[in-house]
Length: 195
Image (cartoon, rainbow, N blue to C red; front, side):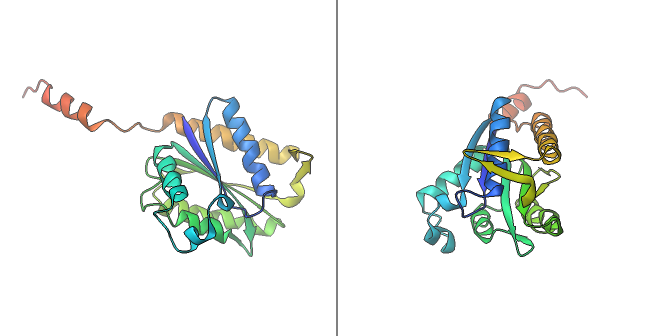
């Protein structure tokens, strides 16, 4: 299984990136290959001018097309997700998440922003035709603490995030696999039909 993780914070050290890093480690311990991207990895000009010829953008689109799932984390600013993240998601083709499972994660300064996941981020993932957009995880900034090189989550948040990652793994496992067109053709040609 391959999952692309996408961090929407322009800051190198942010709570949403801490959540994403925690999720990446948990998934890798369960045998999932995770390829990580951050919005700050892309040249601002490529994002703002929708430069589809950019090598970074092409690689990102290719990795998303190969992935089974997408893990997206963002800080919440003014009751919405990161504008840089929206700009990057806008570069994906219309059906980029078709046959894929998406798990949105967000952090914000107050619990009043928790609806940003449902009313801002999830509709964008659905518009990209995600097969399944899982219940998102919202974390209040006070629930996340940095300790040197690692992040510590309060027990309630850690439990909710672990449960969401378990749901992601279950959704990935039950996801129907596309049939190779050549195999389908061979089956149809070689089928024994009777009436």
